[in-house]
Length: 289
Ligand SMILES: [Zn+2]
Image (tube, rainbow, N blue to C red; front, side, top):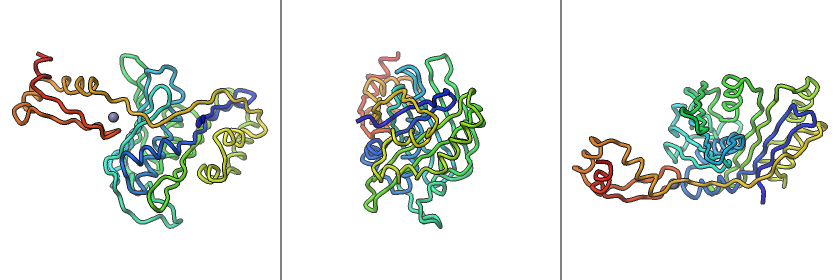
């Protein structure tokens, strides 16, 4: 079933992309077994990366979100490939902190509030594009909105949600990203602000049987939404034995020699999917000589 929908207002002034990322975040939870607050934080970041990655033009492009907020969860990373499939990891999967006063998971407390959100886009150019903004709250949706305002001068509404069951399994996850294009009309902006304010939270919407298509229709209510695209995105790692070997070979002769002397049988674990690759450094050193 399609889980991502992109739509445009009739005037072309407002674009919305909505995603039901429940299966994506479930796969992340299966791989990394995080505590609830890390599931919520990393799940939100994966959802944001997929929504932002849906703008990429070519299958080889990629977009990386990196949040370094100084909190107990460590650095959170989420990467989207050119088809908006995502993968990610947290520096520390198990963080146990009290709920917020409103009873919600304290994502900002786990991520930390002091630090930066970095956005790296590799569009096949010589150098990747890198944008960085200070964190607003570490709650992630606000931080994404602030990034777009500061770095890309694009007024944006970002909503992200992850609902975690008491047994730590993922109940619902999703989000949407709404952006004003240069041609957006004043009355459209007023209407869309009202629409968004009236919407339930993303997880409540999904919990009530709502779909990404419902989300874009609610956000663009009265503005003649036109569905541009529907697609299916998933949690997908891109690692392989060949790529891992290339990374090892790129370490340089001195470092490889030091590793060889310590123990030529090395294991490299992929952060994104925990797959372990085993190499004999002797073979790799020969290759680069
Ligand atoms: Zn992997």
